[in-house]
Image 1 (tube, rainbow, N blue to C red):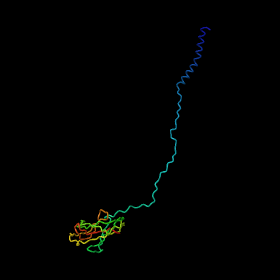
Image 2: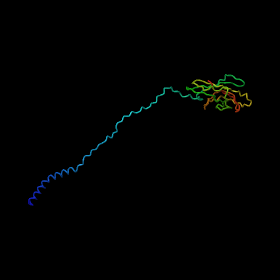
Image 3: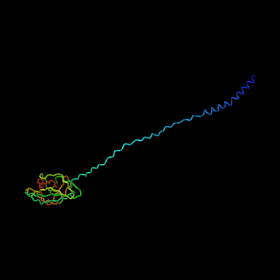
Image 4: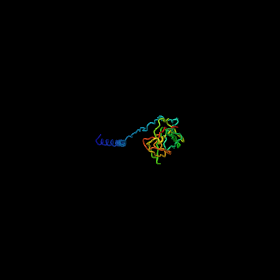
Length: 210
């Protein structure tokens, strides 16, 4: 085969091969630009549902015991009225009287012990002489529950001022009375002759009794 014939055969083979090469190139070009689809697996982020049994809450059981009322307060002068009963007579220059107090409120109160007693005058409650001594022969019998309208009494002994030669006599118009442990006082009108001398004690008082 001559050179001219060989060149012609080679040209035919190249031309025949061109469509196949072009097709392969096109396929390669189309496939080379694609990225394989990524597969994303999403984990279930919601926590698994758990059922827990809550422990029962302890509930305080109300007491069925009867409630006790608050203890009654001590009687104050503002809760009381006072009077003197001097019908008890006297002996050896002394007069025995009853010092009486009455609960004028609608509340119970407590009397416990000796009252404080003194003679007063000038129409304004000015104390005259010494306050009453406590009578050890008439001790307290314990707390007295004074119901509304109820009364209690203590024995008040008054020694007549004329028994003392050095007594500086002053007319008293009544008594000032402090209930046991109270800081306020009540006034009881009851005229008596007092001694202004601080060293002369005309009064002696016993503890309150029912």
